[in-house]
Image 1 (cartoon, helix red, strand yellow):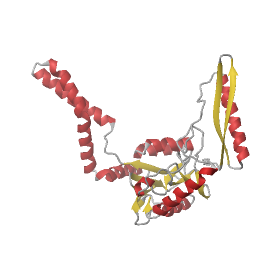
Image 2 (cartoon, rainbow, N blue to C red):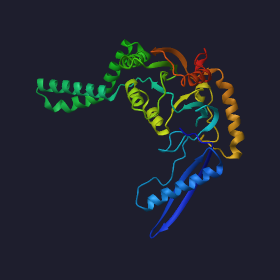
Image 3 (cartoon, rainbow, N blue to C red):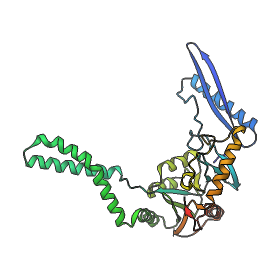
Image 4 (cartoon, rainbow, N blue to C red):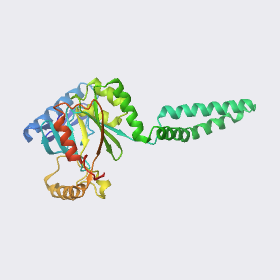
Length: 325
């Protein structure tokens, strides 16, 4: 995991017969702005060399805070450092915990059925339409039946999904069922559960993990973790948990200024950013990012996980009675 203090950018151009090749790359460093600039120029030179050799590359690197290119680290303001863990301010202004080896996972609740269930419903409805047409010797109406199957498949699948979810005790009950199935196969794991506004957060406490550990991939798959979060863990080589409220959930309609909220910010815009953050932090004090529910599994905590767990619970308000946001 790399969350650099300094950022820079470099642009290179080279004219070739009948064309001009331009390349833009970012550089970063934890030591100095000069080192970041040297890194940017080195990356730009390497990219230009590969482009001239005929390799297909993106010529311009996107400026993104977190969901950036492969190998480009998290581009967010560092708010605090706690050992190997770093708290940053994300693009919409919330504080986030970034840790290289303590496994957090998000499970978002959804009312939408999976594509497999929708496909099964469509096939069954289409077969029903076909059998009806054959029994009435009216093959011409099969197209109409097929159209009806296509229209009704999604509502039928959604109804079945919501009914099944209710039988399992709701969205949370269904998620916990998947977690318990995983624990039945891995009894040594210890999973700390938190409620979030959109679902569950899970913290594995029995050991530390690298983001690319096959055990982590299997865990994410088994519990149905958010696919975007899974992809970003691999890309940024870390795990992440939001510690403060989303602004729009606490009555802040204005975006973090200047837009987009990607770090670093030009000096002339820092007062505007600071004013927004001051207002946000004042309001966010009354809310929690998640609420601790229970611990499943072995209930053991690795010594290296304990300080991250304590930091997360304290800064997210997980043990408070504050409203979730």
